[in-house]
Length: 356
Image 1 (spheres, rainbow, N blue to C red):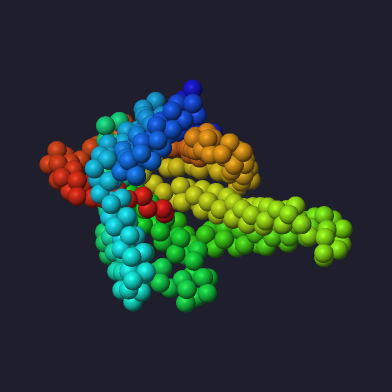
Image 2 (image 1 turned 135 degrees about the vertical axis):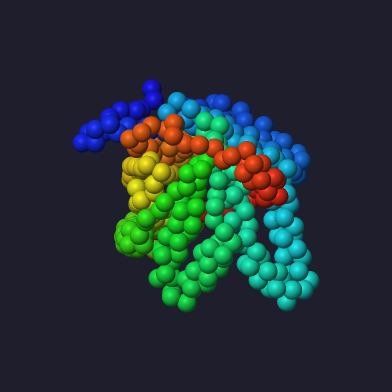
C-alpha cells in the first residue's frame, strides 16, 4: 500500500515513501536472457541488456502511485560501450608494444573522464521521467572538471586525507544540478558528515581487521597443532579463505557505514522546490544484506545475482521518503521548444555508467 500520511508535528505535510514491486523471479528471467545474448554476441547486446534491466527497475519503482520510466535508447549506450572498449583495447595494445604511448593514452583518458561523467549524468537524467515529466542534469563542464580532475588530483598529495571532501564534492555536483521539469534541486550538504563517516569506517575497519586476524591466526595454529611443518592443503585452503573473508568483511563494513551515513545526509540536505527528502538507511542492515547476498551468490554459482540486486534495491528505495506540504502536482515540464532542444542534444550523449 502506498505510504502517504500526515507527519506528526507538521500539520498539512505528507510523506510519500518510494515503493518497489520488482520480484526476483521476474528479474531473473530478464537477467538470464540478457546474459545469454550478451555472451553469444560477444558483448554487443550489453547495451540492450542495460536498457531492459533499467526499464524493469524503473517501471517497478513508484512514488505516490506513479511509476518511473526510462526512455534511454540502446544505441547511445552501445556508443558509450564502444568508446570504453576502444580505449581499453588501445591501452592494452600500446602497453604491450609502445609503453610510452600507453602512458600518454592514460593521461588523455584522465582529461576526458570529466566530460564523460557530465554527459553520462545528462543522458541518464534526461531519459528518466515521472508523471510524464522528465528529469534534467544542469551541471556544466567547468564544475565537472573541478570535481573530477582538480579535486581528485588533490587527494594523493594530502595522503588521502582530502578523500572524504572529494566524495562530498562529487555528491554536491550531482544533487545540486538535478532538476525535475522546470524545478531544480538545491543542496546544502556539508563536508563534516563525510569526514565523520570515513573516520568511523576506518576505526571499525581496523577493529574488524584485528579481530578477524586473531581468529584466523588461532584457527591456523589449531589446524597445524602448533607445528610449522604440519601445513598441508587444508591449512592453505583455510588461510586463503580467511584472507578473502577478512578483506571482504572490512570492505563491506566500510561501504555500509559510508554509504548509509553520507546518503542519509545528502538526501536530508536536498530540496526540490518545497519538497524535502528523508533517508533512513541503517549501516548494520546494509552490511547484513551485502554479506548474505555475496554468500548466496557464491553458493549458487552466480544464479542468485538477480535476487541479490532486487533485495538491495528494495531496501534502499523503501527507506527513501518524500516530504511535501503541497503534494506532487505542482511541477511543470519544460516548454515544448526547450524539451525539443534538450531531447535533440541528448541524442549525442553517451550512456556510460559512471559511479558517483
